[in-house]
Image (cartoon, rainbow, N blue to C red; front, top):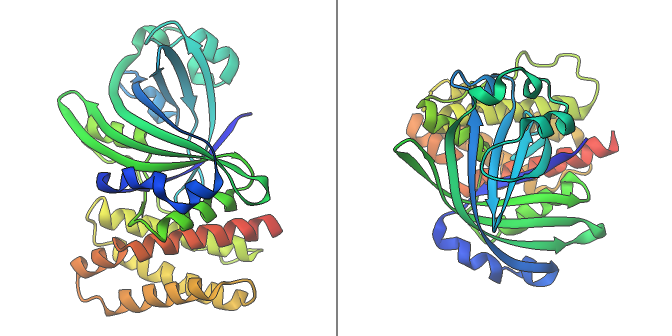
Amino acid sequence: MPIESEIKLRLAPAYLPKVSEHSLVRRHGHQGPIRKHLQSIYFDTPDLGLLKQGVGLRVRRIDHRWVQTVKGASSGGAGLHRRQEWESEVENNSPNLERLAAEAKVGVLGEAELAARLVPVFETDFWRTSWILRIRDGSTIELAADEGHIRSNDRTEPLSELELELKQGEDKDLYWMALQLAETFPLAVEHASKAERGYRLYTQQFSLLAAPGPAPADATTDFQGLDYWLADLQYGERLLLERRDPQGCSHLQAAAENLHRGLMAAGQGVEISLQEDLDWLVRSLQESKDFAEVCHVVAAPRYSRLLLSLGRYLAELEARD
């Protein structure tokens, strides 16, 4: 079962040409840069039946080829997107559901009359510059800089981001690379995929954002407790920055304080810089006087570096457990 693991990072267009000059690319670049024009059409039924099943379907033009891709629902945290993915070539810009249903074994794709009901819902059109990097312990990661736009009907949204996709290795290596880049560039962790942003344009509504649920009183490992509070931290952040919902403030405050306590209890193996960044977040949230000040804290590059550091720590902790 093919699993895609990647981290998405927002980066202003002015910085994208400078990625090739980064020492990480110069030291570890194995292939590239490769520059391609990628145009994708995302399909769904008029009532968004695929979205409701957690399935994404697109057909992408890559040079002179058409490649269809189906993706499952995303999991992961701290910027990591982990999902099932299947790809196959097609003859034109229409999906071949018979081929997909046979390969992907996704139930909804085998439904009768589905092909006749599919319509284009949005498109992405961007230039991608990519490199293959080989880093420590033999890990291989594709680094891609994407610039273009997402379009649905007459509405467009700019696209400017970095994608780090794991080709070989462990999730902690993605975080390591992201943190190296964050030392140079003012990055922000991107929680929404291109597909989620496209559906937002199409429906003019935010996707459902599920709260993490009750706190795990009986967490059996440090990982379970910290993973829960990290999810709550990101939930609060998205409420605040995406939806402008003041309820995000209480989630951020509680999550930051519990993450701080959890890491202090963990003791060994927690880097001083991570402890200092959590100290900064807790103190800054406590000192913030209003909604705007909390938003300013969470939008700061230091907050994104903190998320990436937490993600790396949890990836290492999960591997040990």
